[in-house]
Length: 155
Image 1: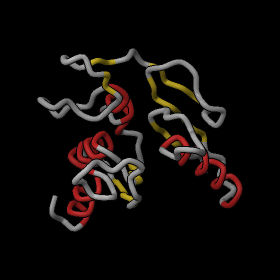
Image 2: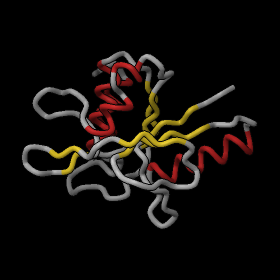
Image 3: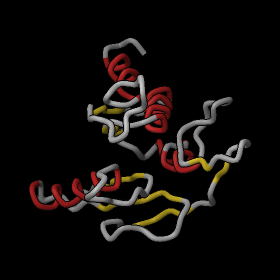
């Protein structure tokens, strides 16, 4: 069957594997092992994309009131999605999603997973060590404690 992998357009890097690397490898593995022909859609605010990306939705860069560039997640005051998240977890897109998969993740991933859960989008969490864990945080990043508690029914 057809499969569309939708993500925030992170660049795939073999030296510093992240979501972009994971999507590239997943696309390759699905083609080789599962005979699935997935397509990849990047939702991003910059020009250019990796070769494994089939489609790009480009939107204007968003900046917070304090001048920070917003990559995604939710607004601190309203809880509504911002930047890339507004596009791939917005109401129109949510109707088309079969689910959200979160592999490890930082604050943006935690906010996205919490928002998806609040909106009734099915989700799966895959525990993975953080590339750059913050001091005092779990080795698995900020999404880990929330996802494990929510999965256990303690959301």
